[in-house]
Image (tube, rainbow, N blue to C red; front, side, top):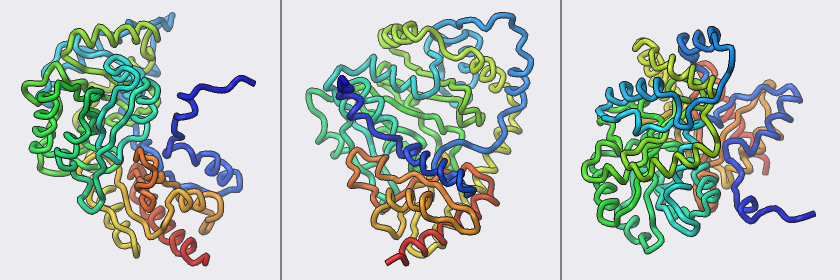
Length: 398
């Protein structure tokens, strides 16, 4: 049998989904699982979005334009204006989720062997998309002791060489929930300008900021407008991950033309997803306000609960709906798998994402997990109880 590609061999398994076979086996045994491993909110999708899906009156479900329907892009212009991000519809390209936006950005900006600098821990799929583009991620590692703050800018500068093409950030951050400050963003801007780099900025979680500090978009940074590639998605803000609608945004006309070639090759973004997305942008302000308040309460429930468990520590995330917590175990990969394969309490267990998969070097994050607080408070409280029971059982095995 012919061998598979080197690219496929290098492609990492998702820390978010790699334990799914164990979870399915546990469910087959009748075990109830509390899913803290994946950012799939349980809050309802806006009713206007659901109604738009129910009342589709097309007789043909046609291809859409490769850059997405203009009516959707016009509504997105109005949405971004609320955040002082001034765009035209032509500067927005609709993609099949934020994932495709990252992939097309890498494919358009990076040659095989080019390098991008990424603060870690980072969203695991960045590594997969870099491998797909033949690019190399050079990590700068933040620490739980420092609350996952941006490492000193000198650490970035030490990694820059003739192959460096860009810096990638996620703000607010997945998986840590960290929110970059104005000072940190200005330092990144200065570096991008000094070395003529791209700045890829994943800002999917801008609605979920729990501090008085302002949201600083890469699009707010003056003097690097042509360098910025903004990555976005409607999945989280409207709790509609399955519609697979995202956006790649840039004022760089030459880059947009390059991205459009990849968009044309895949023909068009999802038709039904765009219909739901366009309608969802009209959701009343009360929808966003209620969702925001719910996440504030969930965050408090989770973080207070984690830090009450003996040996567990989590910093307070200032954005998104994740945290990276340190557990009193030597190997969180083994512990998370064991929770699904060997542990249950009163017929229930908990599923988390081992944090080692959010680092380029799996030696990092060995005693850390990413937890998504996407469940209601009752379920979160139960999941925390199960986590404490699991840690007790796991550490008493010897």
